[in-house]
Amino acid sequence: MHTTVLKTAQQTTSSTSRLLRSAVALAILCTPFTLQAQRYAYTGQVDNYISTGMPIILVSPDATAGAMADIGAASLPDANSAHWNNAKFAFIKDEMGLTTTYTPWLRHLQVNDMNLLYIAGYKRINNRSTVAASLTYFSLGNITSTNEEGANQGTFKPNEFAFDVSYAMKLSDNFSLGATGRFLHSDLTNGMDINSTSTKAANGLAADVGVYYQQEIDHNQSVAAGAHLSNVGSKLSYSDDDSHKEFLPTNLRIGGRYTYTIDNYNEINAMVDINKLLVPTPPVSDGDTTYSNYYPTWSAYEQTSSIQGLFRSFYDAPGGLKEELQEIQLSIGAEYWYAKIFAVRAGYFFEHKHKGGRQYLTIGGGVRYNMFHFDLAYLIPTTNFSQSPLANTIRISISVNMAKEKK
Image 1 (cartoon, rainbow, N blue to C red):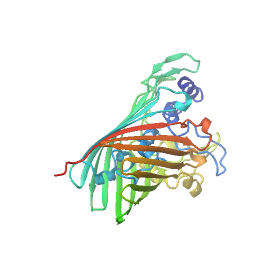
Image 2: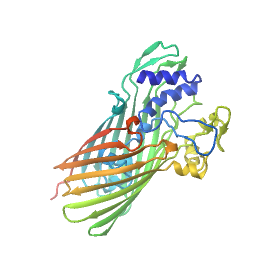
Image 3: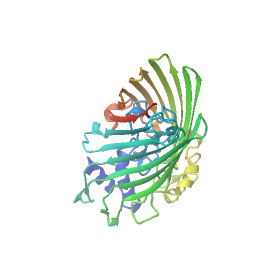
Image 4: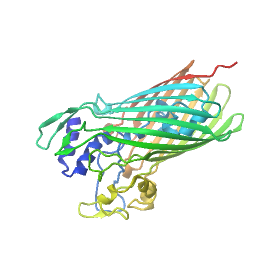
């Protein structure tokens, strides 16, 4: 499969930018994003997907959120908060914690060597501030490259990783602020020459900022809200030609949570998140004409800076406000806890059909035993199950939380 993907990508383009985009498409294929965007004469309703470099850093890394349709802006604080909302770390109860999640990737497509590994940990400094760090590593397995004539160009092991450090601080008893710095590395070609064009691994820096608020209504009800802006930073370059760079998956997540404690043994959390990529919407082209108010050519789109793209992403869609609203993703989820020991979770994720069409149910559960937590998530596509690369995706998380000794 890997060989076919890369060969197809090479044969469908000849320019440097398209070759590099084909290499990046390998990573895009391994995430919920679509490999190619369909381009038609502009009618206002076309498939116009937004693609970025390193989309894997947007994939849910843990089984807790993964079982609730990728919800995390205002979910209960845990060791995975750096991915969802770094400000939640300030309200974490335990003194220190570690977590790791393993996700076999694209198993439904009979791909046996793609895996996503996530490791994270945190340490409370005092009652108001916490530091944390996490590592995301994605292996695309072994890929055999061929040229346009079908000749073998060698086998390599593309991979990507992101390492970040976070700090969160309470500004009041109910409100906190978080910040994260992140280093990104993406090696999709192993320095191979593609049609006489040299390639290289892409490196980048990014930052996140988050806010979080929680409030008790009474002895058995509480609410929370959060917002998280992530992956604001430099574009990624896969060659020495700086005119062709890939946008980082800059992302805005906003969400809320309602918690109802029925009694000492039963608790329910209901949550909702909305999510939007703050990346320019690509122009729509029929081969001869490009349709966009802000990017009359592909070159103009590619030369847009990441900061320009962040602000334009709210109003630059060729289809206007209607298309901008289509770019908003929705997640709804809930979890039930019994005696703070057993958890059952479920959720639903919706993405518009013209923006990727990911629509799926998620289910899962968790068990707490002393300081150890075990969580499992399972994904069920609700459209084209047999053809969806995400079908039967499983996430397994193991966490260790160490509470401060009480005197």
